[in-house]
Image (cartoon, rainbow, N blue to C red; front, side):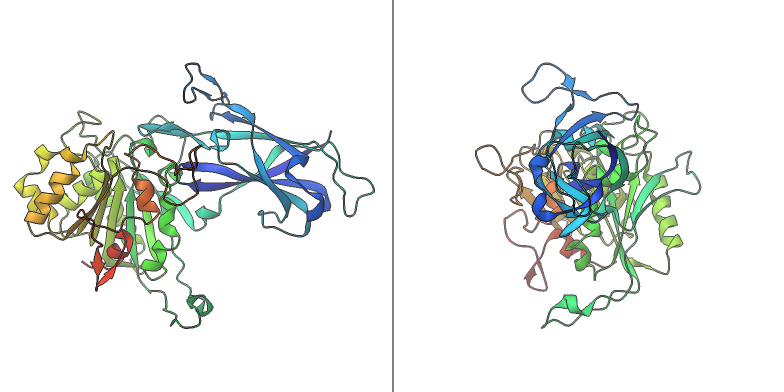
Length: 444
């Protein structure tokens, strides 16, 4: 058997990054009509970065087993080196199913790490070659050529130039495209809008599971790929901001709620506040000619939702809007002084009834009502529970896939937050808007 190379394509999905496509590098061209999924088998062993096989207990099991096995192949076709379909080519794309064995991350809401999907693809049926003397047979693809992820185009990483109080934060960022928009994309009846010369800055703060933690060898990419923060760099959210918005995603070494005594306590103080503000200021200064400082929006989920509230409280005249998602900012810290400071920034909370980790009755709901009483511009989308609203994920009985109710950020990234606490639509200029469209309309 001949050993050959392959590439993977990673999709950043609602339930974490996963390998959605394997691109095989064949020795000869093949035609679309000669390729079928059953011509190949794909075996995957999920390995930690030290090379050890991931051991895990699957749902309903009491025993930890190696995370390895054969993965589903749902389509196969000739393609180019990036996986785009062709009529004939020396590359073949295998579209794979989203399942545990194709997941590129392992862990939970309090900690997660990347894993390597070590894949071996074996040809199990002969395939006619366009320019070869004999059919292709017995090929084995077990050497990774490239790892591709289209959603990470224009994303970069960086680190603070100077530590603040001994704290240096790493970060990822998306640089928008300032080139003129293609007028043909506006449609036949729409007036094409030029992209802004200075763009809004969206700051997104990750949850507890995406901090550096013990995985010090990992870069800040996990802060924006562990959950689908990259939705902020794609349409429709970029479109709300005129087709161009910066996205800045700092990574915390421990937890944003770390107050120097407890990492996950109820004080609602953070040792990272000053360093985070310095990072934001430094990033703005570095791109001063391209950032609109009147349109700085901060958002975050869970642990990062707390830090969103904390930053709006500590810097009440800085942010144009804040979007805390399932934020643990507790009632005992919702003082009159805190409410007075928070009321200066338009806020849109997102939470779910029955949240297993952050009780809305002890956090977002009383905070929302106090801000309403203070006359603040504040909204809150409150979901009964969290289930798939995209139609992509189903339970075995065909109903929408349900997940834990804390994971309401899935709806925020899918742009499904559109109603206020009373169930009415949030309006801007008399038109219903989503939370991101609302944020795009805010100015400091």
